[in-house]
Length: 83
Image (cartoon, rainbow, N blue to C red; front, side, top):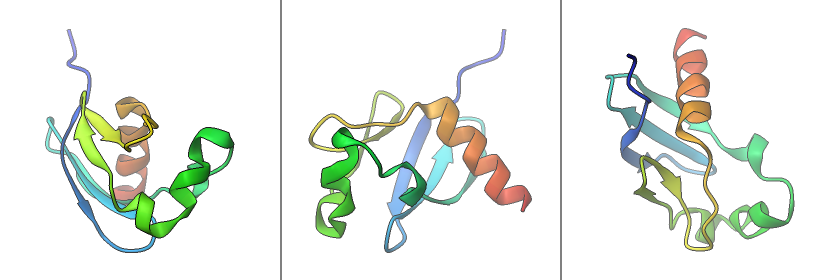
């Protein structure tokens, strides 16, 4: 059985970019700007608020409880690395 990808480290890279490292060794920097639409993501448009992310439950999370599924982040990271 395959293991679900989980974020083990996240580092801010400026603007809306975060460098992610996953438990399977996949790593890369992705731009979260594409996801910043809708009411739950509204606070993240403020760069100061966006900066206050943390890793919890295997994904990137913000103080208001907003997160993005780790599988989605993993796929985007693999795509970014391949590009």
